[in-house]
Image 1 (cartoon, rainbow, N blue to C red):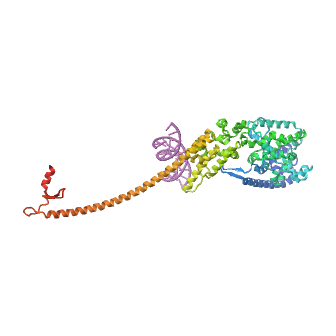
Image 2 (image 1 turned 120 degrees about the vertical axis):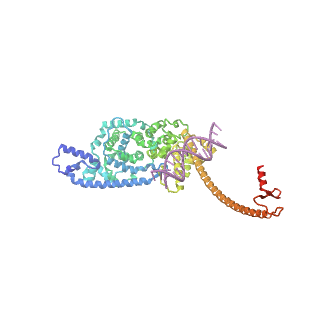
Image 3 (image 1 turned 180 degrees about the vertical axis):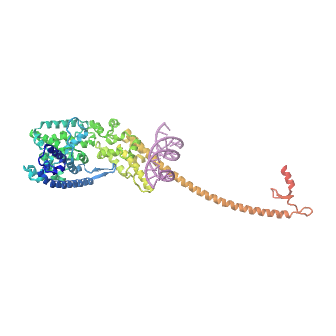
Length: 594
DNA sequence: TAGAAGTGTCATGCG
DNA sequence: CCCGCATGACACTTC
């Protein structure tokens, strides 16, 4: 840009090439080619300033819209993700973001040569998207600008129009451009040749039943000026708007189906393909074959429009069973064919991606996956943010809906709080809270597993029901092997967990009881010791008294001569009948020796 | 950072 | 033989 500050005295071919390169680089910023001309240098600063203000305003608007979108989202307590309360609420934000994506896209559209990958198809959709979403009624200024043959009078129009339609010849010549038509047809053929897309046929009824969410009602009027660079498509828009059914279904389904983030991430020059599509429409109109609503709905673009919805496997609800494996395989990477659910006669319990995804995991593997951050379940939830709710719908049978309603009620009524299953949660240091939180985490994991396999009764029932009731419920439902194994595991673990808790409780109670017994026995011992001391004391006293009495009695004894007996030679002995005899100690010793 | 405490789970024995 | 329960042992987390 520094070189451009110099006056372009005589631009050479090299300078022109450089200008062309710079212009192509700045095209996404809204710079027109003529701004590189010195005569437009004065306007450049003002236009850049104005564009900066517009860009800031646009970003602010986008932030507000995203904020409003987040306000319209509700937190899925099971998956921890934000899911829209109404599916069509993406549109408003999608419009702005898509437009931004177009503004910010710097990569040219890849030519549609060779086989298209799924990402290329998505990019193609994203490139096609601005044409679809920009269907707001042109404002008076906008219409005047469109029909004004002297757009130079409006500098804004000059900038936006010429900046964002760098190849107006494409638009002008598209009506007779057969090569472009062939390219488009080839693109669509290749697009439809992709196995993932072959099942993406949506009937027109389902499309017309899409909740219509008109952008006209939601788009702020000041954004019209920002989107004025879609002028070449205004005619197409008017044609589309003239057909309200097509307009509504086409735009609403596309905008509702396309995630905003994906559109923001998709890059590519949308103008080329937009012009080609426009050419297609214009050409058909010229040839008298302007597509009707039904035609448009059966067009490849309508199938593409419905693709994101189908990528969420809404079409797996039994309407297109033949294509379900491809769709599931394409996204989850887990083969449904390996699952016995495919042949299960049950009410398509295992038909969901969730169930199949979980089926091939053993319980221990699921445990590992659960405990790991970014587990499979969580990733599935991220990959299919609406999948979980769709799975719970169970449109196959009313009884199944009742079951799942019962399941939902049971799960919601179960004494669990949806806490993160990750082990690193922050809890209060109180043991009771920690205990309950771990219990809840365990309960949540089992609940998630049960929900993943669509087990139609709650974990609480699995664990706490009596054996007879449990077997009765098990016999009432047609469950596959995975479901039975999971139910048995959950019940076994739950029972054993309660048993372990009871066991530990009993162990603690036994310890406390034994401590009490020990204290009691210690008291008893002390008491007995005191009693023993008392007895010993009394015994010594009696012994002392007895000795004194013995001496007194022995001293009063006299022999035949009146002499006292010597205590060393005689002693007193008492017989059993109570008589007392004076026995000589020699005799006593002799009797002992005898 | 080592250790204690709490908890879940598995394996095993017993009734 | 099967099932439920009790319990030791182990792993893991938290403090």
